[in-house]
Length: 421
RNA sequence: GCGAUUGUGGUGAAGUGGUUAACACGUCGGAUUGUGGCUCCGAUAUUCGAGGGUUCGAUUCCCUUCAGUCGCCCCA
Image 1 (cartoon, rainbow, N blue to C red):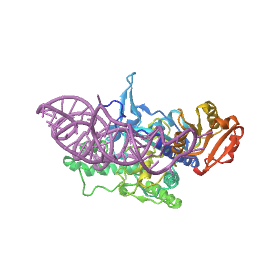
Image 2 (cartoon, rainbow, N blue to C red):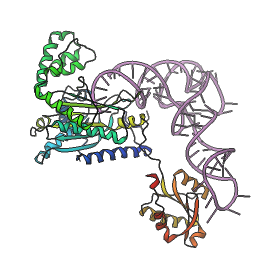
Image 3 (cartoon, helix red, strand yellow):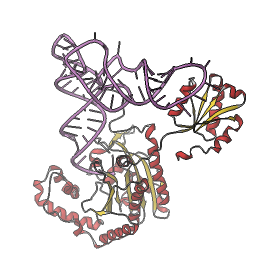
Image 4 (cartoon, rainbow, N blue to C red):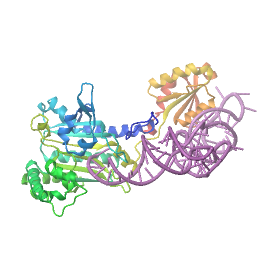
């Protein structure tokens, strides 16, 4: 086996593509600043219980997808599979709730899930996410959805659909859960083994089962409390007002236990795009902060798949990165290499992206290299010119001699870089 | 966890049970002394993912393994 290879399901972001990542990250950060979300950075691993408690012992993430290890102090640690649990933990631990609410934060970084890799799914992947604590208002739900939606608008991507649903409040869920258990119990013996367990642990997920199917399971919306319905309707009203196109999808339930009320996903609708088309998913998690030992403060957030978004943008033919280029290439001769190195350094400190050859080559080879690098201007430091304290400047096919002492001012006057921005 | 499929140089790829593994791109160098593109010339795989087996002989056949890709499940 070849040892020098990356772990399964990971990827390298190579120099030729890192600009795209930086650009996306810039868009996230600027949108966050408009919506007044502040960054929070938490560890990429936590005590295992943090994730088990929040996501639910029976969730797929906890049951088969976590990267869990025992550290040297015999503590069970887990690489974070998602961002909300760590954020809530930090929110509670640092008592951020004593400040005025709502508190709005965002995070950006790697997440880890042990899965079979495929298009748009990796074991280490990157998420950008936001969490807003402390306002139980449908306006906040709409604001968060709008935020996710607008990121795509800014990127110029419109081949997506916003799906929304509500799981209702605790009473709605309890009502529905009871109805579901009553419905399922009589037919328990016909269910698959997983579902037999799920009736006790998490009956909602029985409906998700792809093995068992049901004729007429209870309808979630009938068990929704009036209050929960009103909250959902209010949220939709705001979405309408904000001009966010959406579809209500009653089957949208999502995999984590902590959600209630609003849940939503943004899905890519590009034809032929892989099956991993959920670009962004989120929802409300009232009660989670309390469960982590904080006050009973509501929360809502979303997680945004950065790698998937990059794939979607590529599939849609949207170009994020501009061609690579440099401002100046300094060509030298053996006699002027030392002076050339000093000049290169001076140009760099003046803000010009500058290169020279690191080994002695013919002038022709240096000019070719300058072309490869898309140099905007080429400076040739010839021996004769140097003796006259001058340098040759080639710019857009023209060539003139400039006094060395004036070179920075001259380059400033050319406004280099502007055509590339 | 299950299923399908693939694995030849930096990249895209052709190929065959048996002397030197096409071709294209890329990269580098050169085409008379210090001028870029194009063109032309030259250099770029002791080796066909790894390990084992069959065979006189395997990159080509078989097994195992690793990795990639795609799908199921689930999700970002």
